[in-house]
Length: 338
Image (cartoon, rainbow, N blue to C red; front, side, top):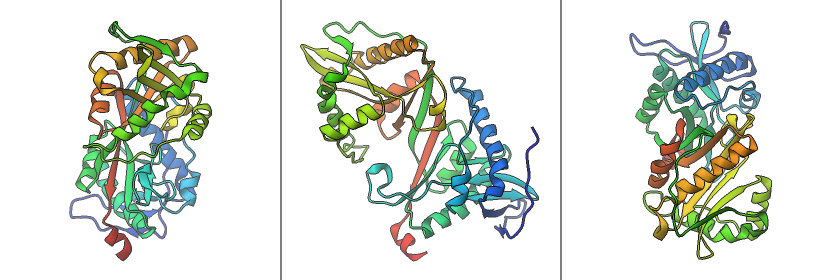
């Protein structure tokens, strides 16, 4: 496939250092969608070469909304488009746990050619970041592919840090211990409120160090509404009739691969502290995978915060990371001054 290229007109030139590629940056418009879509597919297929569990995709995200919201930029070298960086519209309470106004460039809303990726992303963020701050956003998040070390290192140099991870696995069964003294089952829909206390404990745990992350808790009505909306599946571990651990999966996901057939997403897992280290989570994950295979699901995904040491240690035993979302918090005084 021949990569499309668009000629430049009315672009802003960002001066390059001597010996460094001379890039021209412009607002991202509908004229850039064809080339940007090519880059999205190219970058995704590159990550698939590292993570074979990623599914083939026929339909990529619609980039038109990014061209319309005015927050995106595109980079050109000579007459060829070499990268783009866009964001969803500004939103309040970034991560649902801060008072900051945020922007987020999800998977498929940014991309670059294979060569000089760090330099391309550096110039893209220089231009997009200015737009975002001028619009009032002090929390900037960008989803990058987990194996794109060059782009990640550039964002780290710009003050970003790792925050969120998306990972995936095929529905191949895993080994799980017997876990004597515990019973395991799928939670029936009429009994789903029994797991709500543990869901609240999971939310409470995010306040602790090193998380320092506030999670809004659902009341019974909101919990049931979310349960029905996402068609949640719960597997639980019990001891003497008391639920001590759970794992939850849903049709919802965090990246565009959630639209592919045969995909389900883990949205939460928790085990009471006094029952940890006994293999309960492994057993629950094993049961979930067995259920998926029976229902025809071929892939299971999960997303988690990298600032959660237990999640990092558990999920990456069984799943392969394919995205790393990086985040930067801008000095609010700069937002007010620029």
